[in-house]
Length: 443
Image (spheres, rainbow, N blue to C red):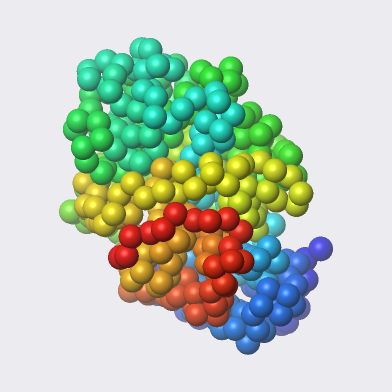
């Protein structure tokens, strides 16, 4: 049951200029805030004041006007200390009147874009654990027709760590007429020519890697990766959401994504269009379409809630066993988060990143997961979606935002949330860690 605070609505703040593509932010934030089931923060070794300071950081991000809806779920040692949403799931995007807007709740599912890569990577590592594949094997051993144009040397591990040398795909792959055409996508993957020698360079595979991994999963199981994820992980643990797309009857339940923030100009627009295959605005339009929402896009169309994404990372933080059900062995998780790239320049994103085999790793100073988070791991989703686990703090968390700005003045407020979580959730003793994590290089 959701706990709802009922307060009278107050007049809304005026809209900012359309050029900035921001939402109409209510003066009274409690009128658009909803609560899930939360326990007393003391059960997670935190204080009520600390939890409220974290939520104030979320409200600060919402006040930027860049996000129609925000969800945050924070688990500490398995206990849900924060499960809240703020804003609207639809009807209060830039330029919309808001008269028939639907308030988002913690139960509202959203597309999490590239945060799906962590889930896809987990499926692949699980199949390795089961002996159905080995991540050091060449992709062509499972997909023989893939070994053309020099791609015969590409391994599954190269794909997981964004080193396969095939970061881009034609924009036609995300065309709504083709997004469900499995044979066409396979033909494109096989015809692709690598841009660099496999293993040589770090170059983020925004879409291509997911389709490669999805096809490998199909070859070794005889099932599509959606069925594998459901049967091996989601169903045994009782997840409602968390798979690639949704059933046709659930499309109307999914919260909308919105293009917000200032329109992009070169070179940023060029860089992102090259990485994604299509312009940013087109990505948002496509992701709201029922054809995309019912397709299988392993790198980008998992639909879930903040609570369930946090719970997925709790499975990993807890060493692969959740609510008495063992899914993964601790050694499988250790392999997945072992460092593969250390502050190496990414030739797709144009920035230095630290990667494991399917996960973005934390760092001592500059990290997606807050400062002093060397052992944290997770994944970023387009554009301000975060899902991560921080074993040193016994934290598993998810932040889902429905606005898709790339650059906006208040972007620092996003990092203010992860920073605040790191401050309010102190590290636990090494002996209390759920499983031994790989020692990270100092960053």
